[in-house]
Amino acid sequence: MARSASARGIQRGGDRATEFRAPTWWDVHQDRVVGFLMFLPLVTLIVGLTVYPITRVLTTSVYQQSLYSQVAEYVGVRNFVTVLQSEAFVRSVRNTLVFTFGGLAIQMVVGLLIALLVHAKFPLRAPVRGAMLFSYLVPYVVAALTWRFMMSDATGILNYLIRTSGLGIPASWFGSPDYAMLGVILVNAWKNFPFMVLVFLAQLQSIDTQLYEAGAVDGTTRWGAFRYITFPSLLPIILVVGMLRTIWNFNNFEVVFLLTQGGPLGRTETLPLLIYRFIFGEFSMGRGAALAVIVFLILVVMSLIYWRLYERAQGKFE
Image 1 (cartoon, rainbow, N blue to C red):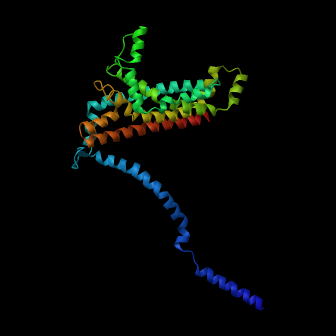
Image 2: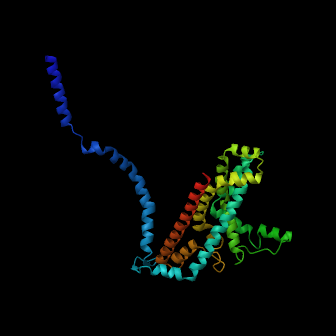
Image 3: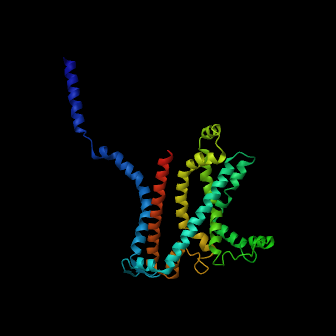
């Protein structure tokens, strides 16, 4: 009896202790608070590097402000109307589309062909694969200045080969309105095609070899294997890297600026160079910001189109 009474007393004491030590706010929300504090530096970094600059550009686009003045006048959509109605904008859009998709086509074709070649087994395959990365590792400044010297109409090795081989009259690649855009596209394609090689080669190595073995048993030719096995497997990644390279080509400033600075006669002036001219040439922060917003919207639309095509490709070949 005494022992039972003691047990009941301990149980009542434990109940009172449990009731007295009720969960506090910290006990309930400790995990959430700690998680938030650990996530806060990343949120701060994203806001500082992304949200604030975008907000600043959107705000500046509706004001008329000089580059060297703190005085800003609210003008609403006037900057957008001025930019869209300008002849330079229409010309720059055309140049940007030619530069973007012309370079993308060359990079896609060259990158896919080289990826198919280096995917096969041959002696010294590893060194050859490493050599493919050379142009991608070269800085834009070095690549642009090197090719500008090599394609010079007076001392360039390329024009020397054209002259001595009798293929035609040497061209002024970056000084001629007819050849400047072609020269810029070729230099940009040479600089960036290794990215395509890397991506395509990685995807080729992930294709199940049993598919090719089954195709060989059925008498499938090499072209048939590429058409019905290789290409369907590469199509989703082609769309992904196509979207990435479209965005990067569309926003490319270094190659065009270093080679032609938008000339001659504006034949290579793309949208990024037009933004640069608005801000640093005409000292108009408002028009430069308005054009940057327009470029952003164009890229959003392009990305949505690519993403829609990617989803359709995934659904078709799964």
